[in-house]
Image 1 (tube, rainbow, N blue to C red):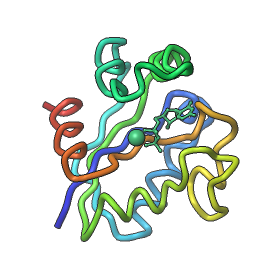
Image 2 (image 1 turned 90 degrees about the vertical axis):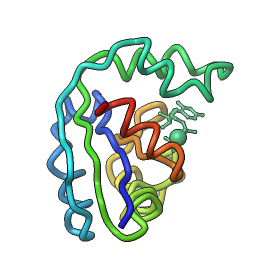
Image 3 (image 1 turned 90 degrees about the horizontal axis):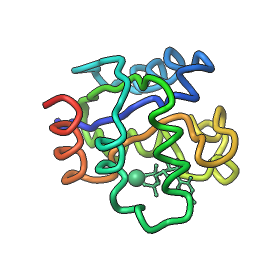
Length: 132
Ligand code: UDP
Ligand code: MG
């Protein structure tokens, strides 16, 4: 069994998409191990997206993740990291396949509904960062 971290982004929380996102993970057999509603602070979000700090969209990205609460959680299952990334879909919702969360509910970057860890190391770091 493997664990991974996700959060529903503030714009999607405002749109009422929390239930749909969690339903898709549960329908695929993933087990919810932790769940929380939280207003993230700027420093935490800047650390979380540090790999993108030189990109032109960094400031807007941090702004959109701190402009309201996220709903964040830990999911567990066989190959959970890869399975969740597949359910979430491609980063750009305009390129994400129909049937994926981003392909069905994403609008225009940086708004792509949900974050999910991209590998075993980031999953471990992110679970610690957001749940201690
Ligand atoms: N992002 C953006 N423009 C881009 C690439 C990424 O606004 O050209 C935002 C988008 O919200 C994305 C986040 O930055 O989810 C993190 O980017 P990453 O490359 O880690 O994509 P992800 O892992 O979320 O698919
Ligand atoms: Mg990423």
